[in-house]
Image: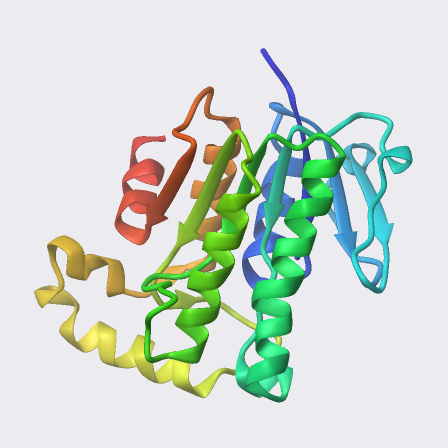
Amino acid sequence: MKKTSVIIAGSSGLVGSEVLKLLLNDDRTEHVYSVSRRLLECDQTDQTKLTQIISPDLHIQKEQFDITPSIGVIALGSTVKQAGSKEKLRDIDVHLVVETAQKMQSIGVSRVLILSCLGADEQSRSHYLRCKGEMERKVMLLGFHETIFIQPGPLAGERSETRIDEKLLQFLSKLVKPLMRGKLSNYVPIQASSVASALAELIHLDSLKSVERISSSYMMKMINRS
C-alpha cells in the first residue's frame, strides 16, 4: 500500500483539526507536518506520525522535512468580524493562503487541497466571496500538478466562537431542506467532520484533474460510497 506524507496549514481550525485527526489514524498516511502559530494539543494514539512546525508567519523551508510531503492541505480563513476589517480579511483569505501555497510548492508539494467556499467568485458583490475567488485564481496560476478547491456550503460544527450569521443560515436552511435538491442541495449545512472526511479521501485518490472544485453534494456522495 502506497503511503502518503502530508503538510497541513490551518490544523487548529474547524475543518483542519478534523483532517489532522483522520490522517493521524489512517494507515495510508506515512507522516503529517502541521504548520501553525502555536503548539497543538493532540490526543491521537499515533503521534509518531506528527511533526509540528511552529511559526508566527507560517514559514517553512525544505531543511525542516525528513520526509518530503507530496500533498498539501490549506484550511486557513477568517471573517470580517474576526479579522477586524475587509482589508485584513483579504490579507488572510487571499495573501496568506497564496503565500502558503507557494511555500508548499517550493518544498515539493505537487497536489494541494484548499478550503474555499460555495460561490467563490471574483465578480461577486460579497467581499468574502470575491476574496475566495481571487485566491482560487492566484493559486491556479502557481501551476500545481493537481489543485483541488473544497467548496462546502454552510458549515455545521462546534467552533471556538459563535458566528451568528452562519447559525442563522443553518437554521433557515434546515427549514427548507426538503425543497433543496439538485444544485440547491449544496446549500444544505454540512458537518465540518463530513468535509474533513471527504478531504481526507481526496488526499489518497490516485489521480485527479489538474483543477477540481468539490461541492457539498459531491462530498456526501464520496462519504456514502466509502
